[in-house]
Length: 122
Image (tube, rainbow, N blue to C red; front, side, top):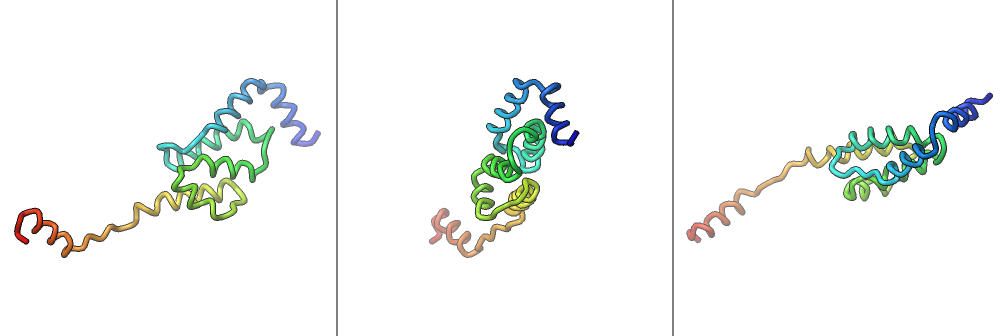
């Protein structure tokens, strides 16, 4: 018996169709929301481990993961084709960390002018 046949038979016998449908629906509705990319990926893979055997290709899972990302991350990731969810996850995690490394520069002369105007010292 081939491995794929065994897995299919095992799941059909020990994994009720109702449970499969419930996990499939939860995966379809899953979004990143307030989670970090890492937390989203863990949840996605946990749910995906229950439904991957019966449904989609890796490219379909990449698309699902992408569509569940926050809009800002999705828009930055959508410009590239990813072969695996792991590739997409790594890119999204790096992009999520990126803004934390950016530095905001405050120009002292602008700050001084606005303080003078507020205090009436123009």
